[in-house]
Length: 269
Image (cartoon, rainbow, N blue to C red):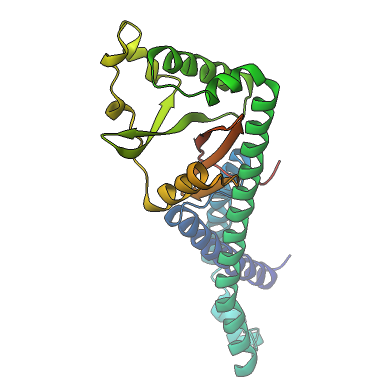
């Protein structure tokens, strides 16, 4: 391979490397800023490592150009410059510019697919756990604000969390009143530890179990407890996934609240 071919090859490698690096940086910024969860951990790590590979290609192309220093000579004596017409050049730049919103759209689509996959996994896990443990589920829905129910609920949730590897943090949400005002109380697997040494029901205060909710969550919970609304509510934001799963039995009702947070997506092997 002569010097002219080496210079031409190094130019091609350098241009391709720069374009790839621009795309990679754009994708990295989009994923980081918007906290998009798309690929599994191994694919994400490979993606980050590929940046080093691109930089190595750019450095190699630069070294070849510096070593031979033939770019000007090749263009001047052999007229080997890129003969791209003005119209073609505009089309190339237009295509290059339009590719960024397309890539961003694909990233959003990947994040959406990850959320939908997570939603299906959470719903399937919740349904499987409840149907496989009818006696424990019956105890959960038989809500009474007292020491015994709170402690039993914590123990049951602890067992549930160890049964399914996809089972995230779970809270039982019940509807109650405090000072004649409706409130939503939340009970988790660790909540009962602070009352294990208490023997009087009066020492357990409802205000300690009030669950803070957003306006949208309160509206949803009110529909469940007041209107027997049975549809699940799923939300995903910045890698945090939440699922409200209503459970009805013998005229009684509770809502199982699942929350999970993950650093990586679900797409890929």
